[in-house]
Image: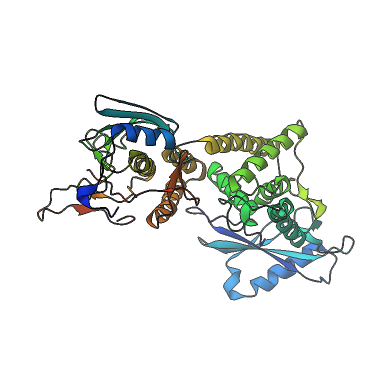
Length: 303
Length: 153
């Protein structure tokens, strides 16, 4: 949904792309629109073998590579703006949605860090990433990747649920780890505040669209266990010391030797600084900040 | 560094002691009987462990450094930690390149070198690769030392 939070699929997983096809339907019947779009796609020889009817969208399967979910939609005149209605095949009715509004809302949440920075009138810490706007997007990617590693089945919490929870809890932290801790703590708080009911997650730009309606008692329990465990892991990760220990934790949390790769990149950057004489020392340790004492050249020796 | 070789003024262990104490408040030093011993807690980077380290220096010899706690550990019992003298004392400089001279301060050379060594040791623990460059006194047919590829000459 153009949120720039796509997570690179892990082995044997596919990219998942969403497309909203907004039209002016001739019929008031949602199923007529759905079938019209389906038939139009099926007319095309290249697509007919790849089509699959889903609950609301039509899936185009490029097996082993990606799938494209095409969501037929019509303008929601009663709500106006970017609000739309989409056919639901099971309920046989129009359901409210607002993907474009959602995207704008998400972008707005992403710029929180930028706005806060301007309000504070002071420079961000030097370790802040170049694109502060990407902090929330990075945090959402981490949450989705942790989900992909934790759930092998279809019981996994939906991306839109995790994204909405993350974006509404984010409060402009300039670092990804800070954002992640804030978000997870806030979700735990929401779960506890809602108990014994469930947390309700709606499209903030169209409260009639409930993202959480697919939850059952079992899948909601799975979701809460996932969040509780993830929060503890994230706290422990941030507190961890030692590159090997941090790498091990990252490997467990995010899979595919991510920790090893992260440590490699970290050391590469540090070594680049060292090679140009930008790594110095103070009484508290090594640093790449200016004004530190230079370290004379030396050659590690021995076996 | 460009001073004439025959004019370098060797720093006494008392001068070394004073420099370490002023630059590294976390170190405790004792100089007696011609031997300087400095023990301190260091944390090379915010993300690395804290270590208790020990430096010993007798002015006619080269300074030596040990990591005392947590003890250094191998990835594999048969694979020694890179850039160490047996059993596991970090090798911080090349003995024949004049990188250490007795007119230098331990506080601004050996200690930051040890901090760098600890970072690359931790990175090696995490990835299996030594990324800090350096040389090995390998026995080779040409008799020349092998130079690590890559990051640092």
